Image (tube, rainbow over all chains, first blue to last red; front, side, top):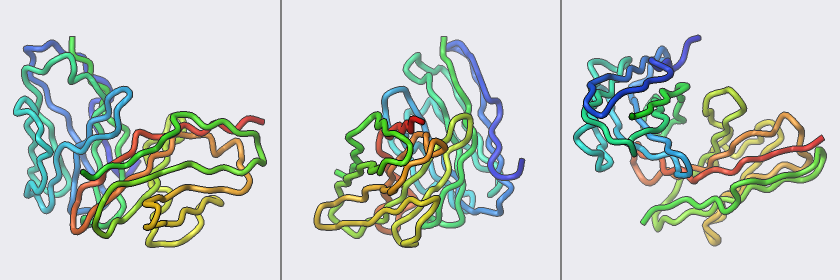
Length: 112
Length: 109
């Protein structure tokens, strides 16, 4: 399916592991986003990239490290995560800041 | 602080009944409001935005700045409307969307 694709769909990792989440969009958008969706909490914006430049970091701990090599790809590098980081991580893209965001299916992350 | 409140976690109605999903926001500037929907086993998607002033799938929402509300309404609910609905706020010149905690709508036959 075209649109926003996230891999992997599920990830289980230990607290000392290092892993990366990947997001790819085929919509020609210039802005990409990472969100965290925890149980019983609203969707929380983590990072925003516009034309590969980070424009928003919503006070995210440094154990989450985003990377945006081009406007179509976005990564979230994870290291030494905590159990409370277990959540659904959603990627989205948009054509500019005021335009609707298109979401991926998310990566379900579980920290052991 | 900017905030979006959806007071109902679950709203259950019968098919054909009117539906109103409540959304209130807290923001002193000029807001832009959205409703996103997530059907079972599907991804989150835009339902409508206030600046479009259009009806999507029979749903409408009017921005009331006096009451700081953006309630989602449909006169006759259908079973296929059952889903999770999220209200979101975008503030001036920002890429940031602030989401409410969502309301699950269940339309019974």
